[in-house]
Image (cartoon, rainbow, N blue to C red; front, side, top):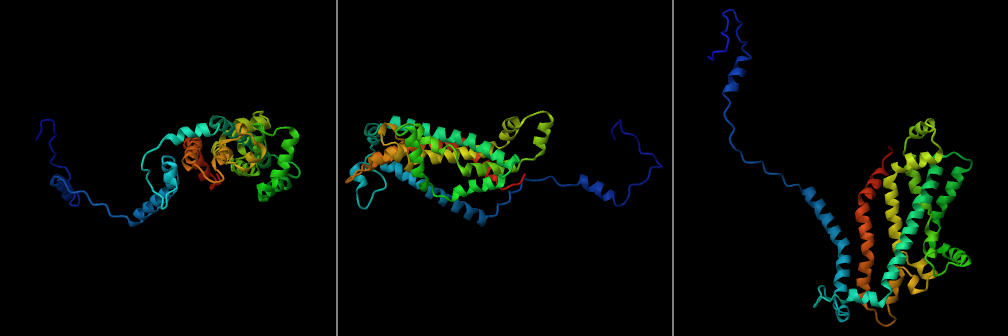
Length: 312
């Protein structure tokens, strides 16, 4: 017995029977020895899910892979029947020929101006209109919003002729503003942002009005930062649509120096022969900016899709 331990008094109560065996067994527990880890059970459902997703990813990546391999082939190889998957010789000259066959730098600049102009315009005008429809009370609000939604049912090709007449009357044909002015506002963007504004609690506006904030201050400082995921999603959608737009640029800008890259690549298609390696090389270079935009804004885009299904 250790020196500092106190002796057990004679009149101490005995240990209960239901406690004594437990106390004794705590000192008799055998030491744990290394045991083999349990094998994980094979999850058939998880394997099937990953297999389907991998197959879908392969289907989506295959066009880009084929585009790259075609750009690295010669013109004779692209005309073979049956077609070959890998090039016989890796030819990188097609990427240089793009810049000589087209005013590629000017076209990329026009595409950038068109995309930035439309995207900024929709973010500004659609957010203002969406906030008014969602938060402001005025006579005829629901009727006016219904008219906005009715625009979504009109095919965009029906609006080409009146828009062309307006641009021609303004003297903007073969200019950069002619590309982005008609696309600076959309009913879809207004509807999308309005739905996000409706999910925000009204108490935020009431507290701001008590502090003396006006309508524009509430919109700019409080409400707009809260719908940042929706703004990012609208920016990605608008940028991709503007970058790939083909019909409108072909109509208003016939000068190759004023065309965007989407319209300029169509000039590589000849009447009797098409240089597919050069066309694929140009298409591959033209698609890189949109891929980078989506990579940087992917987190906000996915967040906006997740929030669209919730009410708070």
